[in-house]
Length: 400
Length: 128
Image (cartoon, rainbow over the protein chains, first blue to last red):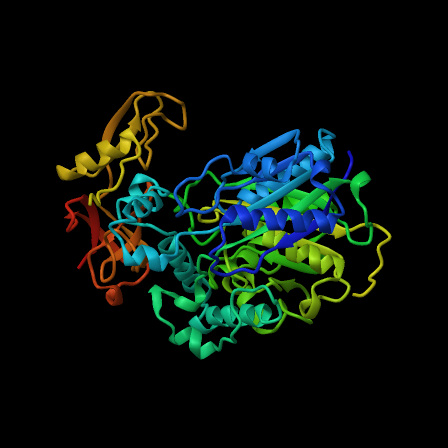
């Protein structure tokens, strides 16, 4: 079967934007195509996602972009699969290219949420959005007024800490490290350093989660150009999607059976992707992991197979997941400090790993990175996608 | 401003209407005998559609607990928890006790609770 490559990437700065998501999307689509050396007339597939969770619905986003940029496509989709949406898009793009149906696919996501301050300032006027957020959860969860997954993550983190003797300092340290990573990223939402004391003294939102341990909702956009080998213009910069695997558990938010601090879908997706790629977890040089809370990061590192259960916090403290460690995890700053426009987040993770494998990650570059991993999730980690990326054969370390 | 939650399925409507009358029940499949939680109108085990309503255990073990900051109801100081009912699974519920006094693993018992906005729900409180 033929291979699929990521030939172009682009992202906006992450933060709170006034710009309409359509315009953010158009800018990243254009920038990703320029990066790939392609014109809109060469785009054969176009896939996107909704513009946010608290926005009211805008439909036919993908079609609008096809018309706006002049793309005559053989594949057009708008995907809503929660946090996985834009990585499902990459998965489909890769499969369709490998099957030979299309030679190129542009994947983009652009998010602009209704600012939380605006909602708090006029709760009555925005109550339809709050009820929509509540109805994301089934009737038994929604009845208790849940409007965000925070309480579910809080209880998972509480159990993880209880089962393995993990301390509040262990969790806070993750937020500090991700901020250190983000300070090397010029497009990250957060620009100020963060200390352990500041994290531990920040308000407890939903115990045991402190404010600085919870990702905020951000705006932004990103795009990837996925192509077959014949459309790779610059072999030195194309990154191969060596494998991608999707796995879901039979749950929706809080599982009604089993241990709530374990997420079996993550391991299934990781093992499947690694097997398909022929690499082992020890081969991974750089990884972007979808942990929207500081306490979830070590759990995800363990589920992916980087560390044994309960051992990730010590590994993080020993510097094994940062620059100079055995694997560089979330060099972008992760969801906590790069910022978290949820529908865009998987693409931001791909952008970072592609930049790392190309040797274009600037100050946060892992020298000689040749194998990368992207992990994304939906719901309360009820489903995961893991992708393994590598450089084209024959590419040398170059500037790395 | 109607703060009551949307009931998203028929079995849930029935569950909460039984709860309003003090019953804490779920469905059991008449064809294969499988008990479900949450209740279903179709059986995931045999795909049958004929159900009876059976009592759930009224005592369980506290698995985890927290307090919501933003929520339509059950905000701090209220406690939200997960209670394991033997042979059934995990039930998400309000916990009727101060957060600071709770520990993972304690035994808790069922009670009904009507929220300030008039929603009939269940809660669990620590056994003395």
